[in-house]
Image: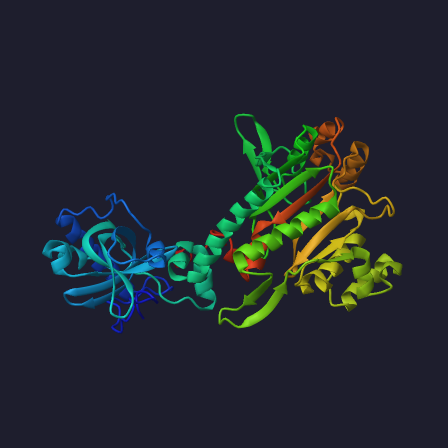
Length: 512
């Protein structure tokens, strides 16, 4: 095993040390760490501070390679990721998250003292190099190094291979190692950051104003979910981490802001799965005098814009670790729209003619397990999710869902049992809900009281009072950013698009 899966261009010799495994530190790895510590002590004895240097750069490794020209005087910093030792000729690569560049040095170019210092370095160390660019005989862009600056001494060898369940879990627990080792992970997280910035620009270009609302709430509102609870000592009051920013953003509509959005974290103290993380990133946007259909058009335009800009088109390929094609998601417009009731009647034409008891039986016959505590509308929703949502890859706006499922949306004028909403399904999961927002304070109170049941203390009275001052008709959307990035990058799990996902603690050594 080598210390890095990458080698300098043209290298055929093995790396100078064996890489660390992903298992707990072995005797061999312990010896490698000890060797590195000894090198650290030798550097310090030479008067080198391996952690304190300042280094001014002219280029980043990847950018220099991308726009390479010969005979440039450059200063570049990066981590040593590959090394070919040919005695007095040393070829190595330095890299950061955006790319790498090959470097060459010998005693003649840097002097005997600097060459001796370089020989005390290892793959994984951070190094600043100064020199001049040239092209090797094999056509490899390279820096001929004339001076080096040690920037950080790595005391542990880098991991090499990433395969199997145990290694996948380590990628999540130690994301910094994953980013060093995996080009795919680096690409996903760079794209995620650029996508989020583009979403902000997309909305700002359409006159939406970005705002920030509280993360700590007195009452958990805007969704039906279990909150995380905390306490503010100075105020002597219980608080919860927000499950949604909706009610505060609607207060801004009441205050006169016609277009607002917030892109930030929500927190829900619920299960963890490949599609759920306790904290997640959500976009919510509200547009006065709009409705759910106009918001659907906005979302469709936004997601297609992101796909064209970052994926090169509207056909999104999902592949496995072996690069085998699993499926292709087609985002071509216009996107399908279908009524919630029609979906259930496609599953079973008699669904709504059945009694509640018969619906439970029918759900089981359809292979959908129904918990004993689920009420009738939840049974229907469970069948919808298992038989339609999870099987739908291409975009589909599911419209006009039952009123009981969405207490903050406006009732449909032609059918009092449903509300004017959409649920956007892509890649087998809900990516975005959108509403024609309920702005009738009397009906809103009735809905929230019905939802709260005996727990009336969970109703946000301040929001209901604000609503009585008059909220304009409006359309609203939410977009789960993590799920959107999963769909656009082909990631299999939400943990693949969250830099530091929450994980169950590892057992303590010795079983303590």
